[in-house]
Length: 233
Image (cartoon, rainbow, N blue to C red; front, side):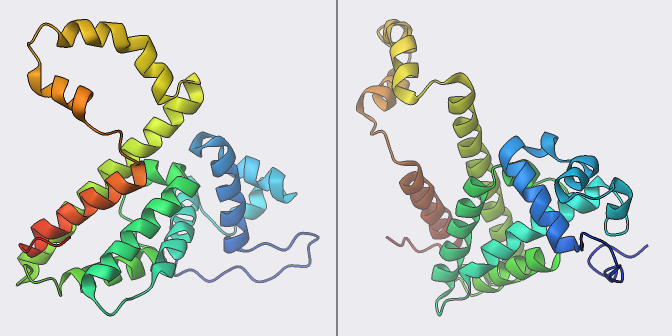
């Protein structure tokens, strides 16, 4: 069986509601944006489109293929970062565009690092990223490139999943950072005053409350500094 990317679209039918894989994916994305991945099913998409569920199976065989289409539609947004004349600018643009797309479609974070993303737009983003990293001063051969891509992808997955989780927690509990600090402040103060956690105390008392985007960018540049072996501000 050919993957969904290589199967031709079904021939147009004389029906009240014209369908396409792009239209199905766009509807699925709207549902996922509003309700998360649990809110996405063939039946719910069919209802949104005003068609019977069986019509959708002409376009996607199962939910896994539907997720593949949704993921690749997000990669199409990421691909808009484009190429830049310098390798580092290209990587920065792609990764920051990945963060923007993930915060717009939080469910995307749930699928990062899971099954391989092999749609045409995902492959295009992967090619642009790998081609850019291959030009980095510290990347001398394919082994270096594999390690660099591994380190970069591990950072992206971890950072974005954490940020999305924090956003969801704040929404579901109605607790923002200041309220959380107020509720646990007395306990934390007592624990830190024991003197058993001097480094944690320094982080809590002296550390700055960093902006999420700024923190993401600084940590990203640290990863790229490590790849090149040459500090860059």
